[in-house]
Image (tube, rainbow, N blue to C red):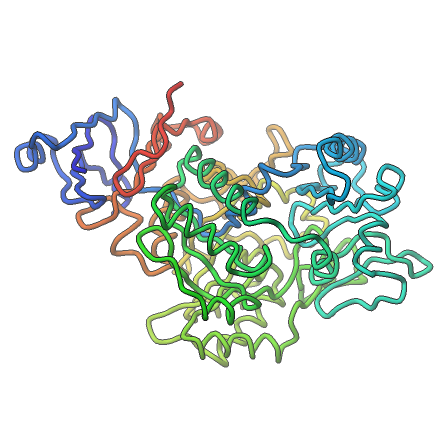
Length: 530
């Protein structure tokens, strides 16, 4: 396919403000940029399409640098609890969902967040048992680092008063030592192992739903971690083969490989082609701030009895990094708390990546000046989730205390230190829309406070810096800086086309910009017909 795109505003992202009048695309690759007349004179032919943007605004394709793609699709197929603002509403929604289930099905939902409730309180079995005396119920907290289950689910998993906390996890108990139905981090695995395995059809359905939804949000690709959550790794691998690698649902899928799945994955035949590739080995080093399981150097300000959960002890973490090196892989490590971040840096120091390569630290929410300076000297890059600012404030201030907030969610500082940063959503935990992430990076306001304050204003990004996280940043972090993330000759013809110019739009209105078209490999995969 050959096409000349023109008639709008085309931002190349080669540098701030840089535009080109037109772009010539052939066989999915940008072959030329410049004036419309010059490209028409050089490339016009009966086979060349002339595509007018009609005043719309083109960018390199937006790419989410950290999400769980199949999980995002599941959120659309399963019970989505993310919008409810009371425990009662969550329970009513779960009860309504039960009507569509067969006799032996587990009731599974996700996205509840007690910080949205008027009276913040975790869900427990005491809430669920009266409504679901016999059916196992599993409701995932928004962060996916905590789940609430009923007594039937505890029984199915064989969890009792005598069950010890697993390494890297916590089974919450009442004063008598009985499990309350709330499980954190690795303790979740005790329940998840008891859930009946999902079908190949279900995973296929979730992935295609996710890709199609991402198109509507202007995403042309995503770096996903979901190979270890659906039974044998062959199940999600087959889904990616069928949907993306086949070209039926074009989407640039860069897949991290969880350390628990890496040995089996290594033995398998891998999908190939322009739409599926594999990256670093994924490791979790701690939990999340919402459940107070992110690993901190000092105890939580609002609960001095804990400083979080260390998922792997120091020796195991070091051994996992070494294992990745033996397989010729980098690591991508979930690290939210400052102590977790420090321990990951120590493990990387012990087993550094090959020259010219870098490891990825995901989230990097709670840091201090010393850790930031150390990170800037090391071969690491950071996956940032700007929308965490919108969703975590103001309650996170109570979790951490004012003193730690100065270097928490410090996106501007991290970029200014020269650390390679990319932008993602962590969907389904946060909304997948890149425009929401861009807006959050620019405004740093809470989605819970209408006309609320800007939190740590010095860390606000410019619109250009924020968009760069989702374009050049997402390309650089996977070594694709010569082929993706910019509009220039030789780059992939992946474009996100917006209704209006985000550089001249009031930042408070950024989330209202419409996605006019999403283009992948030169192919229009989504078009707004409204």
